[in-house]
Amino acid sequence: MSSSAGLRDLGRNQTTAQRAMVARKGAAPPLHRNAGRSAAAATFVRPPRASPAAVPAPASCGTAGPLEQASPAAAAVPCARGAGLPTVSAVPVLSLDCEAERGCAGVAPATVAATVAPAVHVAAPVCGTRRLSAMPAAALVEAFRATCEGHVADVACTPQGKALLQAALRTQRPEVLDSVVTELCPRLRDVAVDVHGCHVLRTLVEACTAEQTEALIGAMHASVVLNMCTASQYTRRTLQSLFERREVDLSALVHVLADNAGYLAATQQGCISLMRVFELCDAAQKAELVRELLPKLAALSMDAFANYMVQCAIEHSDRTTAAQYVVAHFTGNILQMSCNKHSSNVLEVVLRCCGEVPAVRRLFLDELVFNPAALKEVVGDLYGNFVVQALIGVVTNPMEFKRVEDRLRPALVGCQFAAKIEGKIKAKRPVPPHAGGAVHHHPYPQSHQQQEEPRTVLCRAYQDAELR
Image 1 (cartoon, rainbow, N blue to C red):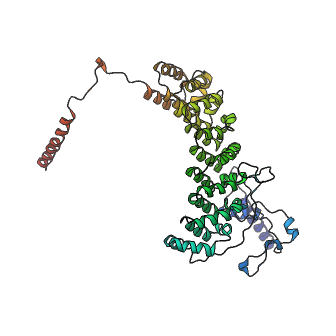
Image 2: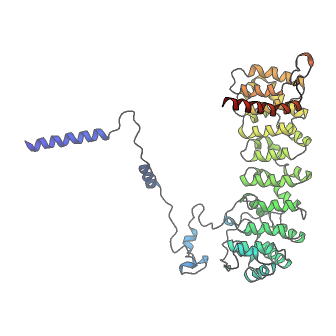
Image 3: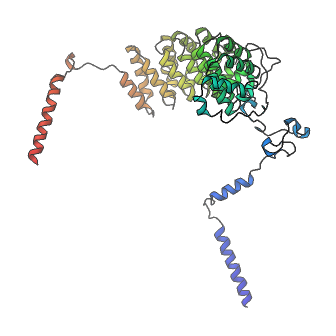
């Protein structure tokens, strides 16, 4: 009897516990931070690593041996994405169909070679950055000869070697410059995109002579130039330094950039490289750089990166040329571009730079204001209303402004951006003169007001003293 009662109590307790564990109807499942982390860790599967026999141990671990000692079976196994790429120079930034290297104007290799430079040890006392800045030029040259000469390309890809080479190059000694240029030209494709070597190359460009600059440009093949433009913000600054100095003819570099302008404009670092070069070029070189971009100018304006290049081309071209670009390639696309996040910024730049040109202003008015359906759409758009405000700001003719205002008033009914657009119209509307045609002046001259101010202060001081 007692055993059956105990079993009933045990069953009743288990039923109560199970009911408590069941989630109520409509209630969210319990969330716990640690539970979520453990579940994520349980479902994540790490990629298999290479076998120990296939990966040579570093020299610091007590083993030594070249990279070629890896087993052929391990070499045939495909690696995971990003594996086995020790530096930026090993990442193939650009792929080109090519056969040979014939300089900047020729055909370039397919990718950057993924070579591992041998370790070069630089003496620690010589390579302290603070000590290098205080060392005389003769001591820097001696340190360069003892440490770097003969393997400049390998030393340039190390942190200590970068500091020593930059300090030695800033001395502008001919023997240092000649040696560095001679050794870097064959290895330029590796050094130019290395995380440390790009700084050495930029310092070399800023210090070398015109003849040495020509030798460097001759070694810059098309793939090297494009990888410098797209690898990082530091690699692209070497090209910017070349165009800032203008020591030699840079038409070969302009040809490479112009032929690949569409590719560069659509990448994050490439569009910045193209913009900086465009700002430093003359009119003929600017026309060559935008030649490939013009047929697809409207589409590039809607791109997240290329729209900045389109803005740069409009801002840094003369007003007549920019107006020709707009009228020839934006016609029929103004409404679509106005309602786009990126191209709406381009249209605002267009109105600011060449909105006073009658042909450009007429294009905007015909496609946005004098089209009732388009006007209703653009004034209620999150980005298009800013284009309308910019268009109101460039209308200078009173009769034209009156027509624009008459078209806008019915379109602003029920618009969420009506207050902003009406404020722009009110600020642009000419101020009517005062009654009687006379300008309102203050009854007292300014000097009289300035004389009355100290007197008022003294009277208030006396009144405060009497109250106390």
